[in-house]
Image (cartoon, rainbow, N blue to C red; front, top):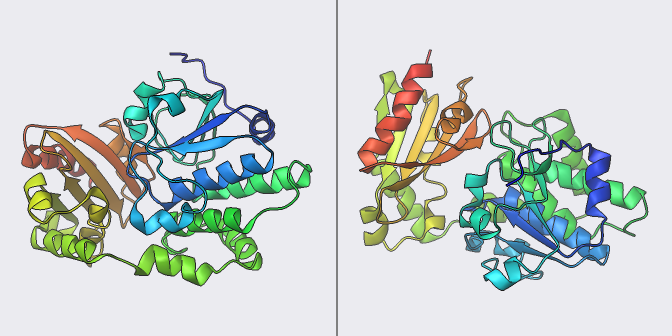
Length: 333
């Protein structure tokens, strides 16, 4: 695996994207709307330049995000024939190899271009990383405008605008989080001005939950524990609970919102056992200046100062939680 990766300028990135190569676009496991929206917006941009492109992920797109992809592509769970039948691979919104899951090894660790906005992670390809961007979607919007200005595309389609808006709105909590910058609002204004139905997109992103997702949040509330005088809150969601409630991985996506929403909580943790083995998915959120990405980086994960994730191996879910909280307590002032 090559380790001499080049940091690309924005113009270099855009010119590379214009190369006529069959393209595979990959994004992180357990995909959110920034990953899905950015990947499918980029897919559409490439197709507008008559460059064949297909998206792939180690996990299927959650049902709640299918409205972004259903007109473009079916499953993103591709067999090796499709995975390896391309001339280049581009990753979006994946800060480290571990976030790509099994795809990274299936692709022989051969990623050509990495496009991301996370401040913590591990570079694994020639890259364009913009940490000041609130979402990878901001970068994709700039790419779309560059291609339009250079005459590489004739217009920016409604599909692209919708995917980019969903990406940015999702990663900013509908423009509520502290990662929002003046440029983020400027991007939002451009997208609203395009005429897309932003109200409906936000409704789909934030106000539509399945009954099982609601039940998962209720179970998370029942399992909630607090530490350090209420400054830290944690939820452990073992596989036994997931199995007994017939839940899918996607039903556990908002479990982290339960500890995060409690008054006085500065650091929220959710430890989820998605399979019946000693591997645990950790989600972390910060409501203060505490840097959760620094904690996740200790375990090979990444993300932002106020939202990050990682995967840990441990004998039990209690041990996994102790590993994470141990790092939290070291850093809690």
